[in-house]
Image (cartoon, each protein chain N blue to C red):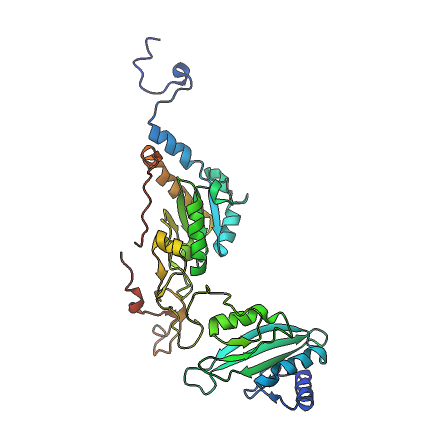
Amino acid sequence: MSQLSKEIAYNGKQEGSVVVTKLDAALDWVRSHSVWPMPMGLACCAIEFMSASCSRFDISRFGMEVTRFSPRQADCMIVSGTVTYKMAQAVRRIYDQMAEPKWVVAMGACAATGGMFRTYSTLQGVDRILPVDVYISGCPVRPEALFDGLMALQEMIAREPALKLLKRDRPVKPLYFS
Amino acid sequence: MMTEKDLELQNALLAKYDYVKARSVRSADHASFDVPADRLVEFATQLRDVEGFAAVQDCEAIDWGVGAGTRFSVIWHICNHTTHLYIRLCCDAADNEHPSVPSLCGVWSGCNWIEREQFDLMGVNFVGHPDMRRIMMWDEYPYHPLRKDFPLAGVDVPYYDEDTVAQASIKVQPAPQNGGPFVATAGTTKRSSEPCGLDQEWTEGHRKN
């Protein structure tokens, strides 16, 4: 037992199931590997999301497969598709109904910039109404690209000061256009 | 090309109903008629009850341009499930400022939504329609966006939902054209005539970043 105080590295035989870490890192580790996405399926990118969530591409390899179709039970909104001005208010309201902490992924050209729909009826990028964390390019997005974007989101979550953001006055994320 | 069956049908109907005329713009495929607005419903009822044209397939409006004598025409596509023949009815809207034509909802109730679409996007009023509201754009939208004098990019309009405006302060803005709908222009070289998004810098001015 006298050796214990000299060793710095983790030794499972001596310390049992104790791991020393920072609380932030522990929280981020938990959060980033249990993202609960909600597909805000509005167009063809939603079809790609369906194939991404099925067994061939298998979203569950990355710890974010618990897709929920209610905003109350999800913490990551995947806006997949063209957002029209008529739909924009519904998208914003659904985002407001999600509980903190929450993240937004703009999946595909339309959600990120309006895509090819440079017209009177289409919102030119969902970042005008939501604080977007990750943009994914593609028209439509391949499942591999979606996973790449979601893994980027995981890395982003892993760097968050989770403890600071746990406080009740969590700062409202700013919009890109404001 | 019009087949013999289509021509036969067109001639038979022209002989039977003397108030309709063959379409002035020659039809490329199916029988089509110019129908005066005051007898449109009567002719449509005859088509349904006597001639067996049971279903409406589509309704569309044409904007002939701002300076045209008759600016708006409305066309209905009718089909007969027994003979497998199609008919087009064309009706000119009398007034260019506030165009209106009779609604055929009373004859084919399938006209309901497709006539609302024409009202929404082209601004043609269908007299006798049971529910003449917008169907695509939101109710407060002040324009009819598929008219020839409306820019594709759109125009500045306040957003209609107070909550969203309070949260995100958006409004409806003209869309930038770069990377948008591809337009081919006649050019001297292959390179200059390639389809590309129009460069309209005036639509980019609202970006604040």
